[in-house]
Image (cartoon, rainbow, N blue to C red; front, side, top):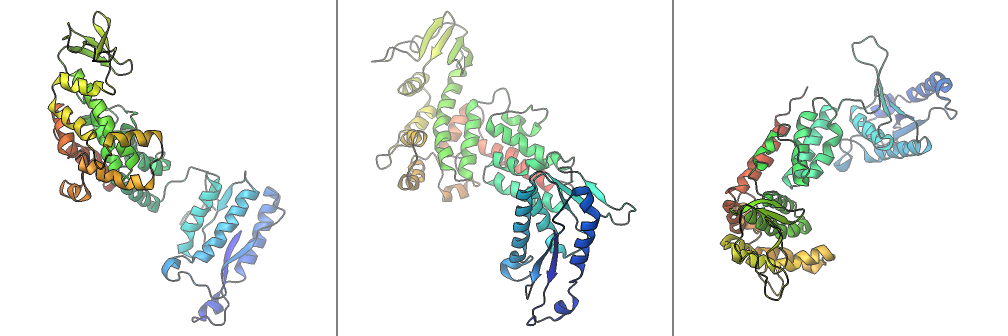
Length: 419
């Protein structure tokens, strides 16, 4: 397909278009292509000429047609789509030897969209003797524009707490020797939030988050903050409530009599005899907080009414305050009720609008105004959250998130060298 122009409308303000249009170029080029390629590729139909600017069409135009006329690009779009559907296994060879510069990148991206990795760039290198350079499908180096666009897109998603989305948006660049330097950093942080933790040797930027004494509820808190940054309420509800579950296990684990807690088996191995207050059956229940399996191993119960039982027996004010907040009513709705509704069904529009009000009143989430006063943080800077993490030796989780995760990651994007 030879994309050409034929602007011949007599009402054109600038008659130079009419006088200087290279109307003979595209038929001659198409005829040459037919002659050169027909035998090799058995293209029976022959090359086609497509006038994408005709009549009185201009490029660039104004508003949305600046810098490229969209009607013209839609003609390219349709031609590429038809070609890709008609020849699903064929490669698309692109040549940008001439033409209007503003159309080159859109045509290239259009071809990449429809032909995926079946693209060959057929170009004559300037000041070199070779007739053309053939860049194999999928092997082309990202352009400078692509690098800027990808980093800008990643930045937007990172600031919204969508680290997995940021990596997914730039993953196509990680095979490039230069671009992978910053793409890998985005990937490492995304893996942390997804729970697929990389080695700290390969990802030193997350080392403060993976120290041996790091509580399990720290990751939950980070995930909750990330969800709130992107206004992903369903995620935020789940992580806010899960934060207590994880923190309770952290508080159990730090008891002096605990040797090891296995949260997959739901067991604890103990160093010595356990205070019988933990093994005493709860009233009306046939289970206790700890239930003996062997001499030094117990299964634990932490769900439902056992949450309050543990809080009382551990004598932890910070856990008590957080649990009370989860059960605080706002017009008959508690945050913990929203967790169940969120997990078991779809939240209707009316209830969705009330979610923030419920969690704001419980002081589990900051309002937009409060977050602005707290360095843009919604969950990590709340008194309830900070108190729990402070007792677990992580007194400033917001600084950890803003500086060690977001700040350093954005700096890596900013410091990327163009080579």
